[in-house]
Image (cartoon, rainbow over all chains, first blue to last red; front, side):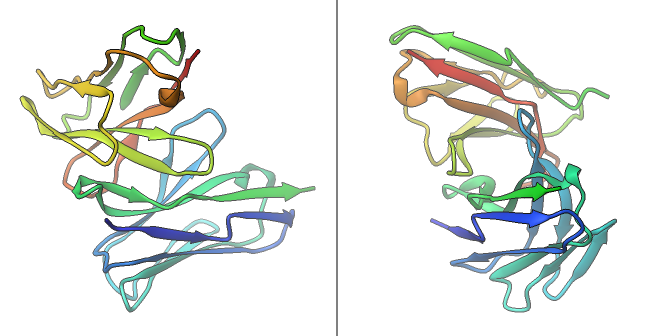
Length: 112
Length: 112
């Protein structure tokens, strides 16, 4: 089945730093989704990408749909304490079914 | 607008007991999903439904059952709880296949 590899697995950064994480797939995706999960909560959609090469921003977050359609990147500028959480990439197709395949997540930890 | 509502939020079961995790959405979405999340493993699809009366297996369906008698509700049933089913369970819904999914807040289940 489809697999999504996220890196890094975790990040320890200082408040104010920029963050960059990426996701690669073993097959072509037509949609890339980036979610954030706060402790004790469900994932919340941050950015959706639908076209190869697309660059989309949501406040301090910017995500890009790779040209090869097998990767995507998420950048966070000037990190703040509330950015702490787990960031997941996701794409259509889960277990050969009509669901989403998720990466294993990037844990973002911000040190004041 | 409640979105996706899951109950209960927490539950402890003994091995062999059964229970139903409830999920309801008020967005009139056709697609509904059940995922489980284990530490460091992302989210894995258990079952999904493309509409009332239609359900299908996802990546990890063993030990679970679902039903979809209405568009709004998609309960997940555990018949004989096992320690391997200790996890956090998320219900989600979408308007279209593989598109942006809205998640509930999760049910944390412990089987002892």
